[in-house]
Length: 227
Image (cartoon, rainbow, N blue to C red; front, side, top):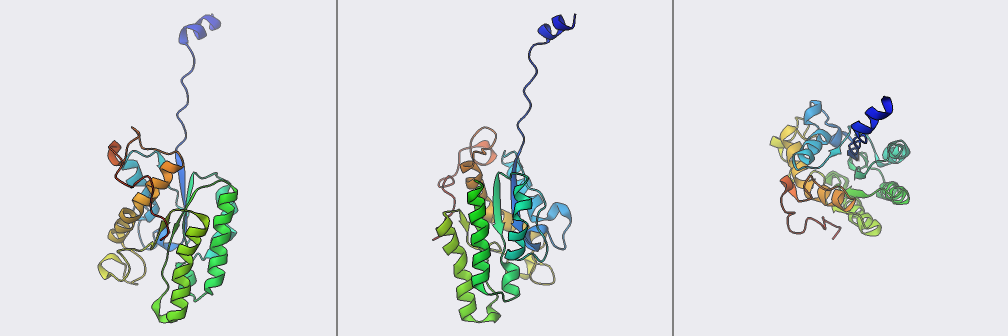
């Protein structure tokens, strides 16, 4: 009787594919310092992607105070979960601590190299140095991000805090960390670069189109690359 029932029941339904995973290798700027969990960058980015039809999870992987050296040291742990895409958003704490730009460059170079070796696509978000450290430091620090993006041929978002830095109304009282409105600006700014990278990695929105399932915007397939 069991065999007859199995024949009548037909083949089992195929399991739904697991969602893609976008890991943000970042610091307090992505961890949502001073904000409720739902207002953090990773949560808002996941919500924005979901609203556009992408089945992507963005776990809370930011670590407050993280430097590029710290990000490199925990990269193997992050890669153990086989992420679909990694957004590298580090460097802010290196600049605040006045770390030698050569060391920051070496750490980010090692991170991008390891991601490439593991076959994990990456997006690099740039950072700008505090101007009180002097012009030579700022020039060396600012230039390392686009140079690395060119060297590793990865999509590049020039400034992670674009539209938010130095705007008191978009930051907490410390003037360094974005408030909920600031996070929304960050997500909106970087979203086209992230969606383009996801689609290059084979993750398309439901329906196969651009945002909201409609046609992809002009140039979206290319993303932003280093100048």
